[in-house]
Image (cartoon, rainbow, N blue to C red; front, side):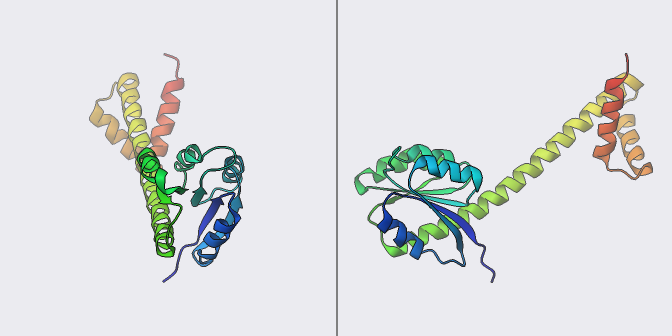
Length: 194
């Protein structure tokens, strides 16, 4: 079975914990691993080199870390490490963003399970993004088809059924995709002087 490598960014100003986390990430699954010490560096790194997983050890030197977690959760899977007394409050705040919260005193197995969960989340997010793009593309095609039919009806006096058949026949006769024919109809009929 082939394991997918996931890129990781650790945001922490605690060198000991950073080294522990890096040591617990098998290179076969988590590579490359970037290490930064504050939120500003994390945002710059994410802009330059988007990563799959971000682990934030709070508090950071330039902000606590919850805002960073919110911001980055739109693009990647995020875990936030907080002191045990803040865990519940921070979890409640970040749950809508899909951010996983860990108390700062965690066991090796919990960290390992969290990494697996984050990697799975990245895979699921990727699938959902592809599905979303496919649906958006299909919706654009439907809107274009509707507009082309409306133009054929209003400008050429066709019925909806005639317009539909005309588009299909033109696509077949010219060996083009329907969406290409639809776009050319929109372009041609939208530019005509009325």
